[in-house]
Figure 1 (cartoon, helix red, strand yellow):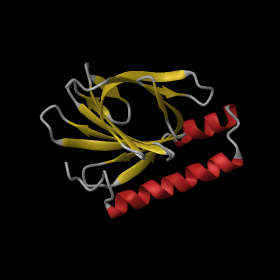
Figure 2: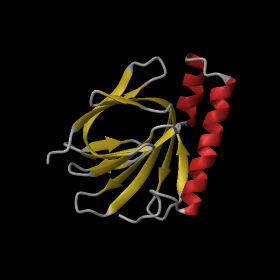
Figure 3: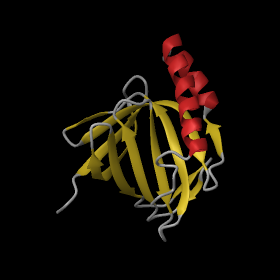
Figure 4: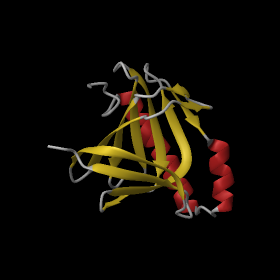
Length: 161
């Protein structure tokens, strides 16, 4: 049976599309959507380095959380890293998943050490889009939540592939 092909749109706070790609829907339950994507070309990312053509991206979108997590695997299958986006909870309908990226990201290496990325971009967009105090507080709590998941090796950081 063929898996549904889904369009994923990463949007800015004003809902303009920042990035868009397609993935296969692997599973869905009441809390979590899981997708599998494959890079169709090589990407040279300033913070992540080279992401080779054929790299697999397992993408986890919690329906009610303010984050998503991507697990990248080299074309040969070995884990490359995890990438966490802080975002508004996604909307999924008509084979399209939309989420609003709130700029701050967390890069998690294979040894589960991590670093927070794009703080300057967050600060610029917080002013530009007038993020509320409540939203900024939620973002801080979400970063703490993700850091706890990483330290405790909760799914998907349990590395049970």
